Image (cartoon, rainbow, N blue to C red):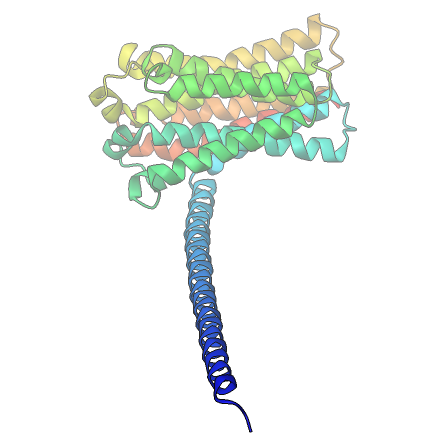
Amino acid sequence: MVTKEFQYISIFNYSKITKLLLKVFTLVSKISINGEKSKTKSAVTSQNIMNRGFKVFEKWHLSTSRSALVFAEYVKARSFVYIFALATLVALLLGSHGDPNLLEAIRTVIASYFLALAAYTYNDMTDQKVDAINKTNRPSITGRASRTQLRIIVSVLFGSGLLLTFSINLNTMIVAIAYTALALAYSHPKSNLKDKFPLKTAVTAAGGALLSILGGTSVSNNSLAVVYAASLFFSCFFILSPLGDIGDIKGDRMASRRTFPIVMGIRFTLFLMLSIPIIIIGITLLANYCGNWHMKIIGIYTTVSICCAALLLLFHIKKRLGNSSDVKSVRPKMRYFVIGLQLSLLLTFL
């Protein structure tokens, strides 16, 4: 028989153990519930982070795709920029005597193209009002390119061009920096050299000469042939730039720009353009007969022939200078004069 006292003690102990177990169970349950809540909250947070990441990536991808499309349109709209790359290549071939390092040549030509396209794109970005008056068909005017996209393209092109020249040698990068500074000063609203006479044409021509010199600098040989090539390229812009100014005379007047046709008149501008091929013929013949340049006769004949063709074309548009659309249609043809002159240099010196 179990005594009554022992029964009370047992009942009391059982009651205490039961209460203790209940407390432990409650505590474990709370910990478990808090753990589940924490896991759920953590999962939700992770999911939110992933969603935000996907949205950021999607926006970046969309922005990059649109910028790439705008870039492709600008390559098409500013197709004549290849003449800068050609001038760089010709100077590079002259400086290396026709035997350049292939990879170095590719990097130099691409850098030249990027820098020139960046300069013209930046000019379009700061020149939208005048271009709209002159009814130019460029992405910056037609609404296919936003200012943000243009800024991205300009930054990437200038940055890529400078990095490529840095990978060649220090002097090449210095020439590229000088060209970049000139391009920014030409179009930036604070300096705006394109509104000043005669800096508009002179700065454009100087920029072309720098990109020609870039080719010779990349092979560390700015010989007389390279300097001569850069001088010819410089002089060509005193035909191309005034032709463009005659075509854009309406918008330039409304923007109070001082260009050759506005300041000096269309007759003087025509005289200036006609004088360039004559000066090039004179310098070429003088260099051949008076200098020790080792110029080949086939190159000299080619240069003289191309200059005569340019004179004929300029005389052909003499009576149509008042029609801006006719002048604009002639400008692309005049670029063939520039290309021909550059190629004639290879026949002259190589």
